[in-house]
Structures are given as structure tokens and as C-alpha cells.
Length: 302
Image 1 (cartoon, helix red, strand yellow):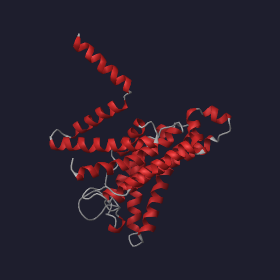
Image 2: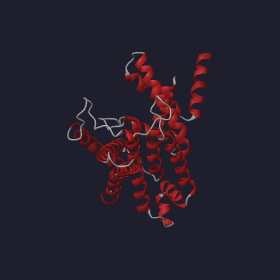
Image 3: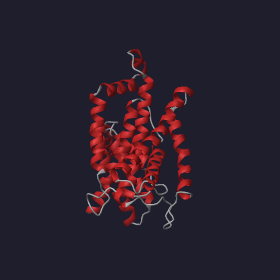
Image 4: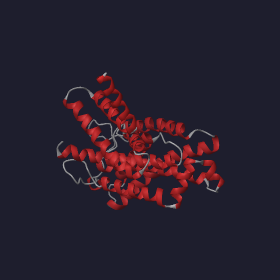
């Protein structure tokens, strides 16, 4: 693997870290957010539009506002699911997925319609100003400061979940809501907080993808990012510290399998099959793997 693909793998891993962290906190609270892809898409779209509107604004102000708006829009999507669960007894898992499905075609229509760039044939918003682009730290790849930020955020999240009182309350609530209610924890605050942070981090993932990788919000850039992030989170057991190596492994798996599919002329379906096989092996408990090999050796000897 050359320097370019090495950097691309780490850059992809940085986005997976953000998406996985978004899933980790809400899993700790006892729920699943399946709207990650729509929330990432919304965050990236809002970021691109904001930076294009503020193209004459200083870097710090424009990027800060773009990240804030991206966080807020995606957090609102997740918060709506929390409200529906609270007042209408709707399942958070399904409503988060349905809201995502509803938002994606709306953004597609906006990108293909009023917000489409008039330059070139790409279905995308206008490219952001060069001064807003996160510079590469390993040229010619797209690896940028998002990688360092994602690692720091993983470390801070681990401290928050395992070392703070509020983080411990979230974990206890996720394991036993009845017990948490019995000892006086406010379930509504915990559910609302975890939903807002989960959606907001997905939005930041989309915003960082726009600022550091694509420099525009093109049609379908989110594809696979949300589900791979959830996969990373599950492999890591929703532990922010384990999300770091899991994301790096997933990034290398994705880039290497895509390269194999491209250079072997096997089609990109083989790329998905390779990823699925490796992830299946990672996700399987080690004792089950050893028992499978043990049974295979017994059959061969027999």
C-alpha cells in the first residue's frame, strides 16, 4: 500500500470514529439510532450551504458556525425521535430510521435543484472556498486534522462515559431503566441528551467530510458511512477507546477491498463481500472461531 492509500484509509477511519461515537453514547443509554446516514447527509449539506453563504467571512467564524449549524440540524432529527418515543410511545429505532429515509430524498432534490452548482456536471453544491478546506497532513491523500480531532474526541468520550457521574448515570440507565428510575435518575433528561449528542455527532461527521475530504456536498456522499460507523461501534462494544483501532481497521478494509475490486476487474460487489466476511470474523467471539477450526481439523483427520 502506497502513501496515498495509507492516508486515505486513515482519513476514512476518522469519519468512522465520529459516526461510531455518535452511536456509542445512545447505545449506552439503551437505544439504537438507525438514522445515521440521513443525519450525516443533513450535516454535510448544511455545512456546505453555510460556508458558501459565508464565503467572505473569516475562517474561524465561518467554520465554527457551519459546524454548529450542522450539529443542531442533525441533533434536531434525532431529538424528534426522542419526542415521539416520549409522547407517542413510538419506537426510537424505527422513527430514527424513517426520519432519515424521509430527509435523504429531500436533500437529494435540493442538491439537484436550487442548490446545485452551475459549474460542471456533478450533482453537488458549489465547492467551498479554498480557505475553508482542511489542509492535508499527508499529501497527496485527504488525511487532515479530522483524524487528530476524532481521536481526541474518543478519549474525551471515554473519560465522560466511564469517569463522570453523568456518564455513569447513562450507562446504568441503559442497563436497567427500572433500577435507574428507582434511585431517582431523570430518564427523560438522559434520553434527550443521548439523542441530541448522537444526532449532533453524526452531523459533525458530515460537516468534517465536506470540509476535509469532498469540499462540497455531492449526491449520496454519505452512502455506507453511517452503517459502517454503527458496525465499528458494535465491534468495539460501544467503548470509545476501542472505537479508535476498530475504525482504523475498518478504514483499511474498505480502501483495500475497493482497490482489489478495481484492479482485479471483479466489480464492486466483491468489495462488499470481502468487507462483510472480515467484519463477520471480527464480530464473532474468539471461542467460536477456535471451535470452528477445531471441528474442521477433526473432520480432516477423520
